[in-house]
Every structure is written in C-alpha cells, then in structure tokens.
Length: 115
Image 1 (cartoon, rainbow, N blue to C red):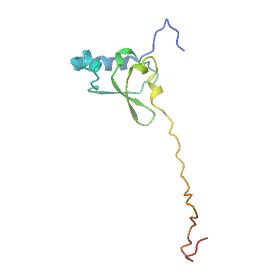
Image 2 (tube, rainbow, N blue to C red):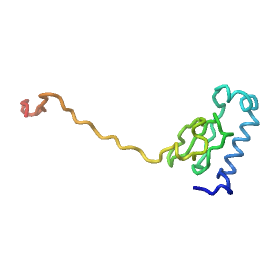
Image 3 (cartoon, helix red, strand yellow):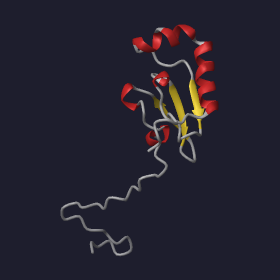
Image 4 (cartoon, one colour):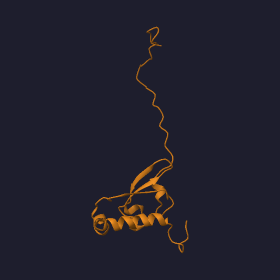
C-alpha cells in the first residue's frame, strides 16, 4: 500500500468538485447528509485511484469504468477504499441456458416428426 507519511491520494480536481458542491449546497453539507438525505448532485470522475475520504460521506459519484459512469453513493464502510473498487471494468459473461424440458424433442419443420 501507500506509505503513511505521504497520506491518502486524492486527485486535486476531485477535491475541488466536492468543495464546490459543498459551497453550492451548504445546508445539505452541514446537516442533510448526516440525516440520510441524498446528495443533490452527481460528481462524475475518471479518477479511479483516488481514496475515499470521510468528507465524501453520502456524496454521489459517477465513476468511469472505461465505457460509462457507474453510479455510487459513498457510505461509512467505503471510507479508506479506492473509488475504482466499486466500479467493475469487466462485464461478466452471461451464457445461454439450454432448454432441458422432460421428454422435449425438437420437431423437424419439413417432416413434422420429432427427432
């Protein structure tokens, strides 16, 4: 991990966006977010390496996964982790499920017989 004397890495532009949101919504920043009120804005970012700080609590982020922005609302358990941990970059393949009906046989459209 990162050495303690360096402190957590957070992109400067991301901190500026969070501070800007706090200035635009002071009543939410000081009281609303601790009462469970949802964030008034979504902050889109490509900085997946940034550490989640306690100041980000209840903020909504859109984290870029290489294609789209994945929505994320920060909770207490997420503090100290990286933003990228919560936006998977790979899509899990979905395979077709074969029809396994009991006694089900395919009918040949030309002959009309089961085969």
